[in-house]
Image 1: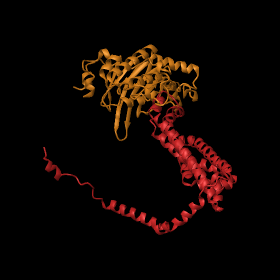
Image 2: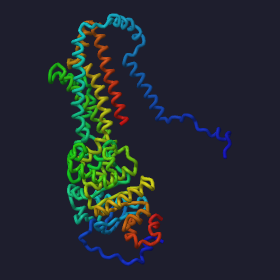
Image 3: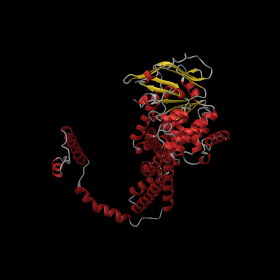
Image 4: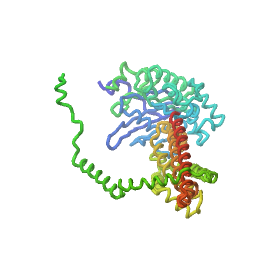
Length: 266
Length: 269
């Protein structure tokens, strides 16, 4: 039985009404490529402030493409995206950059600069709000920025490693530094694209706990993609499931049927 | 399961039979080598006939003269200074141009093509020709040599700098761009640090190359010990020439060894 059918008995979703606490509003979002066809089409959802949302789906379902589209790196074929109440598709690049300065981003691979110190890597996260050479290296950064970066490292439990080179850290530590880099810009919203996919189960659990603590503490909204359905149901309050180019699931974790997410991978 | 004897019968051929096109390419390659040897006047007879003359040159060069060691040392230091200042000037110009030249970094196709074209021009015209041009422009002396070395370094280092930035991991820059970081900041705080070991090793190679070049540049009047070598050879003062050749050998050897040591340290991190 397809997931669409599995949910056919669910009550019809409430009509989308503009709400003041909506951080992301996607309407009729479609991304298609000339040779590949539609990655997804007609996707609608709202994500409210403080929500923790897991984006799930099989490989190639369009999770990362959806995230890049929300960030403005992929122009949708049709539809609209409102980020913090502003139309991402209509605004110029500079304005998009300003919007992104309120967003923290953590990728599957930690993407730290290997030869630089942990502190310098975290300070890079402040460059969205304040451009210039003083954000390139910790040795030239202002006292205030250094303190903010150290506080972010404190939040992920790695302040002691501030002066270590990034390439001397373990995978789990590196990913926690990447979280600190996302946190240092005091984001309203954090996107994490398969943040634990390259970590062993223990390190992955550790990183997800850090995510939960820091986003809850900062009151930030968290949107993460994952293949780990246990993480999706334990660390998110709501799940968006992509299948066959459509949003097959949009439900609170408590409202998911038994084994419902497994069907996304069939 | 197949028997060992069966496997022996199915062993693939050690060498594949070349296609007709490959065969023609091999033949053309061999013809090119033969044609070049013939055109270059390659002759074992001439080489053997030249050995006694070479022996005569060595006997007249020994013992090397230390009479002008002070002035020759000054010229050698000037050669080294030309190499260092020319290399540093070249690197300082090559770095910003290479950011423009690296594909996919700045997004400006026109500036990228222009920078790559400039590197190609600077690289393809030999440093001796640049030295002749700068001798005309700024007159005889070490400054002309410094400029020639700088131009040569721009062409050499610029290309390698750009390629190392193209090869650098773009992940950190993309993660930063997702947080609203400007492209220029992302380049300076993630791409350049990632490419830095390559920058340093390329710069050290450039310095070694410049030290060797700076010796030759003196032959066309662009300062340094090359000029002293030319005068000594022209005056048949082979003992002084031998001293100069040994001094050049020591300088190049020291710079190469120091460069090799520094490169090893950089690569080891």
